[in-house]
Length: 96
Image 1 (cartoon, one colour):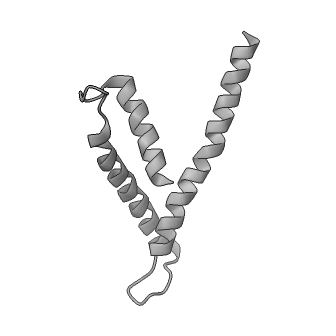
Image 2: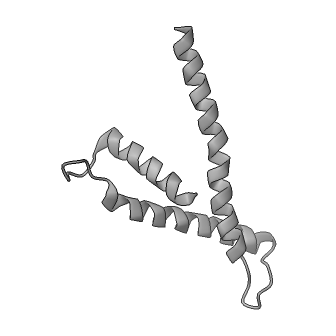
């Protein structure tokens, strides 16, 4: 029982360590695009609004590109937990 709990704790810590790297990659891509029409970097509320919109658009695009790939080996669409797991993995891979 202790081994199972130890493995679960290690797995959760590895997942938690990987999540900031995924969001950092998305932030870096959006940060490079955060410029005004004169080429100056955005600041303040304009930058935070742009970053929020850019990250949301990126997540929607990643999900849209993963949706057609969510099929099993027989060509049937995935459903339930299998689909959720696949979509989570696919979106995280496309973000990095």
